[in-house]
Image 1 (spheres, rainbow, N blue to C red):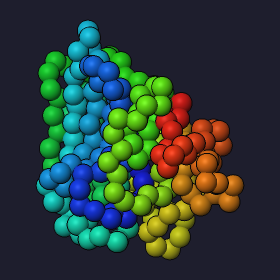
Image 2: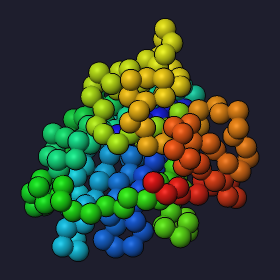
Image 3: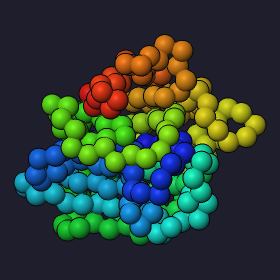
Image 4: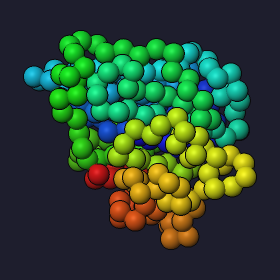
Length: 220
């Protein structure tokens, strides 16, 4: 699962978080918005040298409030590892906004048994394993990016959205019941963040390095 808070500065499509190989057949995943303003989770599993795509998205232009520039919204995508179209979801402000899912070809079992990159997480860009950037179309502010090693339930997504306060907003993700499942956790107002390094608040030491204004991929 992946979750983050965003504040959009443009309605152009954005790449938020992903692990996506530049080289064909492009294994991996991305959580992003499309030009039609769909919120999308796109996953490519490599089976016998070819990519099988599992995809989930919200309705174009929904939720309407997400079109407001300058407001903060919480986004989350979950996948349960089964390859089933029912196992992938996208949420906005803890509401399940999934209106369509698809598997490009083959069976769910084949997708689940395929391979994906297990390293080089990218934030606000896509880069290959050598750190060569090939896409960085991100027009928004982001904070509190979390990656978990399991599919969050709808109740858990609501907990992450509500945080530890009396109202929705960013919080210390490690203080939540799902905190033990964090793989990484960044942009959490860590006092040790610098202009060159963003600390991993999960305690897993997967710090993000900033190079020429772009975040280098981190090995998961």
